[in-house]
Amino acid sequence: MQKFWNWIHDDSGGRVLRLEGPIDSDSFWGDEITPQDFRDELYAEDGDLTLWINSPGGNVFAAAEIYTMIRDYPHNVTVRIASIAASAASVIAMAGNTVQISPTALLMVHDPSTIAMGNARDMEKAIATLNEVKESIINAYMAKTGLSHNRISKLMSDET
Image (cartoon, rainbow, N blue to C red; front, top):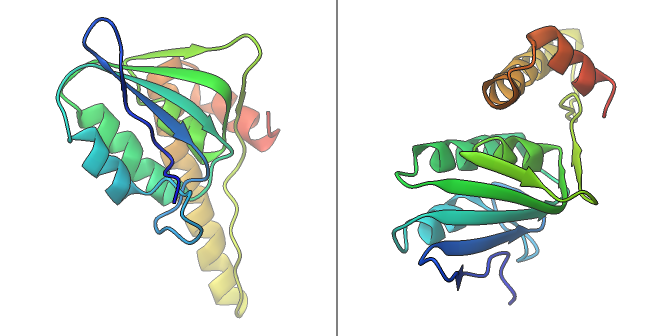
């Protein structure tokens, strides 16, 4: 089974990790980026890290966990967006000390979405949860970009 990561050591002694594929809390197809697998690899060695991202996104809660791991990592992390960091992958990208994007790459943001069923009260709870999730995502974007809450909220609602 091919994994989503591939460690390479660069000439300066730092590590390079390529994050490619969907983000999820569990592995269903074998190519998902999961928090547990990421944690195991992140702490397998020590030192600065270059994290290349090429991902369509996925589960925002799994991405939030990976974001926090990167923020807590005791060494420098440079994020490089090679092709696309969409949706939940864009949240992970915000965790780097430095974020670089190829001139041909894309970073896509949007409002969170879910699938819900039930009665009116269940739908109201789902809406409240989506609003809370959006606020948590805005926090990550604001911390990295310095853009205002309203500006980021609009960028997300416009799916840019």
